[in-house]
Length: 373
Image 1: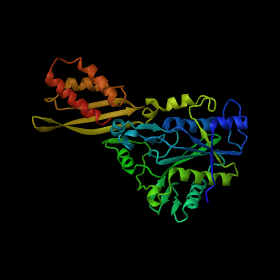
Image 2 (image 1 turned 180 degrees about the vertical axis):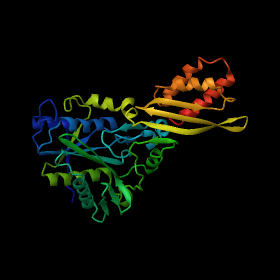
Image 3 (image 1 turned 45 degrees about the vertical axis):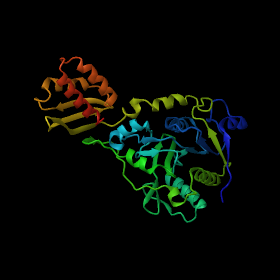
Image 4 (image 1 turned 90 degrees about the horizontal axis):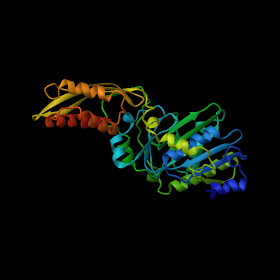
């Protein structure tokens, strides 16, 4: 039987408990259950950072529920070019985010629940949290076969992954967060998390592909709302805290001083792409010349998201060597991204002779290179 939960507005929470204006730092309760009213991935990730950095977790625990509009989230040490289809993300207007925890890449939409368990470093226990989720799910549907694995995933019917885990362990505080697939768009998930890019060599942490399934495919009553209430009830009972989900606004500086600067940092190119571990691209591109295919070799080293070494080799009879050399030197230091490539090629073209045929080949080559970015 589910315990009915009320959802209090975050401002009411402050007033009723007489919290100081500095936000949640000095909460005296033994625990809290929070839920974000935002569906913005950067704002919700910023809440995690803020609680981890500022809240005193001694003697208390916090559970944070959040859901995002369509977005792809990579781990702290991952390479987005290896993990997802960046061109499709751009075409569909889907946000890409890099979180501060490790682990693999995940797709979020409104059919996915994100849960973050905050504790002190000493009390950090991922398996305990996963077993709590399993108990909550079995409260709603006792026949549901869900088990936690040694990799800290949750499997449905012994084979379908419904939850993946990541964590951050600080000097004194820690958090464990996980996903829970209720009614996510599986087709979109599969297409976005399939990288089309060839020839990437990297030491970045790679995701492990898994078969996935939504809970509603097993039981249509297991909606996000039902599952959130069940987990919150189980969490409240386990931690002996009040059975309320407190709604919070991640942009509210009275609750979370300085949080908007955290969200802004998470949106920067320097964080999302620039934090990618050093990698290289070694591939071949094919172009047509008088109905015959020509091979163009491309080798690029990328460090901090910027091109460090560039070596584009095209047949000299198709594109003069000096033009390739100009491209190679012109790209050094630039961001490894299509927008930067478009801007640079436009600038470099102005240094070339007015030769329509040459410019056409230049454009073809640059479009081919942009496709691997």
